[in-house]
Image 1 (cartoon, rainbow, N blue to C red):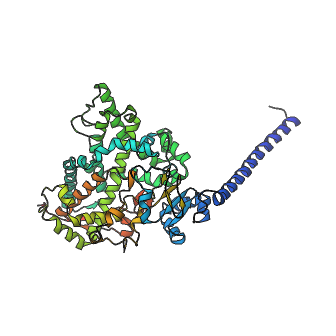
Image 2: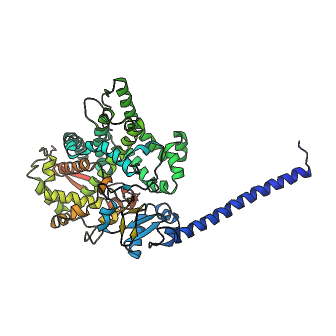
Length: 532
């Protein structure tokens, strides 16, 4: 047992005082630093001259308040209010300028040789981890250009036309499932079933074998939930990238599961394409440079990653990390947005019988019976069908979020220069702008026929410029072919579907998300033209 001495007591007191003083010094220093930082952002920062709320200019916590708690993913709608107060140009956080001006869209989302980088903070990009190798996380313009060039040939109009048979085959599987539901009098969840379709299409093309969600009783809803988790985590990732990036990239599965079960589920799901790519890469190595693994990037069927593995691209663009990242991105990007577009378009057709009747009348000459073969090119040539697709894209908000771009030079307006500044618009605000689209929340395909200039100038559902959606041609093929086949064969009616809960874009999670309590857009089938 130790003995007490005055000296030991004095040392203990000094140690205690030192700890207390250190904590106090840290708190005082941090407080002073924060105050000086806020003063700088409000007075000396390059964006200090732009209008907007002082709290938003001083701190990112203003944005967090509307995106994290007590609101959830609602800052987009607050930005709309800020534009109503401050005008078309608003400083929405310490480093970002948001513009609500349709005629300035092309300048922000430029193509050609005008360089536009992505914003690292907004994308909560990491220099390590699986997704850091992906096209989406390529912040630098030139790096993005190189990576996209490797994928462009697989999504050209010509390449997608060769996939038409595969897409129709998947649609026929969906039809078969719906016919079974009709026979049993079941309610069909369109939100889940369209996601099953789009995921099986993109996985077939990318990986050489579909995920099989069309054959699952629940339509593979766990995959959709995993992707939805990504969107719900985005605001947290922006505000706390120092925590979220290591959580997703570096921690062991056991630790991740303990901290966040939803994140663990997502990580496990993304192992599927990673394992397929790894198998194909190893098979290529063993077979002297050619992938021979049947069913997984099979040499007998053309797939995106089979061609990349067997291509003459630099070795740096064919590493497992690179291919794994693009595989995960392909599944997510090729599933969610197209599925939401499909489900919402069908909702609006069922909710507007006059539009549905007019579309069926236009389809009749090229698809006279429910089992009539029809070419994608013939569907795309139908003016009213194209108008329906355009209006559906406008209101589905497959991509709704603001998309920051950083110009390296020569980006300015009468209000100032924006070089090296993250500047952005929001697709949701753009597509619901009453100055462009009168009665913006009304489903009115006729507007696209009455004003043919609307589409090339104001339909931005797939983005714009050098970073526009890579998969636009595949997505359009799925939209035209699926809607044509379903509305020709089946009579559908909405079942307990409420626009405000199940359709309206209520949360900005990069893609549009309905109310978090929504069970999905649901229908009952009242007639099958090919039924007994």
